[in-house]
Image (cartoon, rainbow, N blue to C red; front, side, top):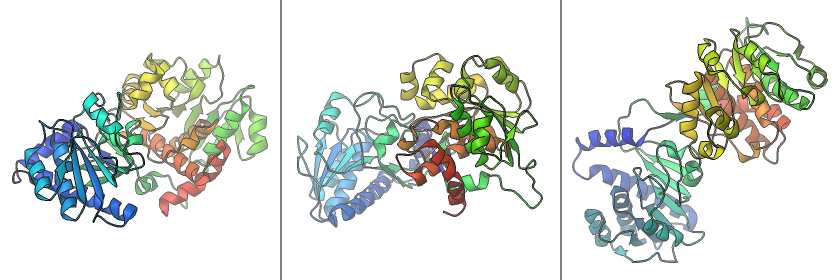
Length: 466
């Protein structure tokens, strides 16, 4: 599992470690890891470090010092290293001396011939986008030259992934000690490129953000035993579809049938369409362990949503089911509840603009989970799952090809099936999003939603046998 920590937590761990180390030792550890990553990239792009033209964009803090010390190491291996300071009067003196001793030099402007650019302008404490002096340097980066960000792309908020103005777009980010939430959550994640973690010896508490990996998902998936029957494996009920949107019911059932539950029960006006496609489906009311309500439901059916939420089964609420939710009723529930809004639906639930949700996804999903007393899966470019005071889970498997009609219906059915199989709301959301993304990657693009459902069993197996 990848775990990410806030700036405050990382800073505290760094202070504790520096108190036990010789002065400057921690920066040297970071610089050594950064230089090694840059050398590896140069080997791949041009065959080696010797003779490479490396440009350092240097800020006034420790981030700039890391870049300078790494540049000194590359210069000693034969690279031609040029440092361009954001403010020549504020530059790490020891690191600058090390660079000059190794043969590197300062320049007043960004050279237009380079094999690699290091972004050492702002560290994890930067807020609010790039200031004009830094933005001017970034604008001068030669087109097509690989950019390596030092710890975090400058202009990205380390704690949230927010980008408020100009920011660096890196090909590789070399981060120190721990992942930061902004490296895993869009829009920051989209600017980080491939993220390489350098272990510098930090001792860290419980994370604020985490991202599941194959082994984590495999350990959570429900698995039948020799004594299992379809009822012991869980039955998921689907309340979805309408005369206008019968396909939503079909797709939700498709996701549920491939989500591990023993049986899928459909209740709604699209029974003929569902049976024509999936004769395995049970039709009509009956006992279930979990309900999925909302996909394609249309207006005027809030009573059905309220009735299911008043029951004692787990409930996943999506799409039209999210309209007019009763906070008090939700908070009174003891059974697992999972809400799965996209940004527009989340904005309506919070009473804010869609743009504010997109810009601050981490804060939005946390507030939703707290306000409604439920697990919340916020769909989008980075899918997030929050539940109470637990670490927010970031889904690492998504693909832009999932931005297609019906893919959310498949995810709802899949999540409901996992709830019926006994997973908590947070686990069902995180595992469902992970498998959904893996299945979409298997299909490739352009894709159709039903193809994602059909690829779910293979994605499931992938987590067990990578």
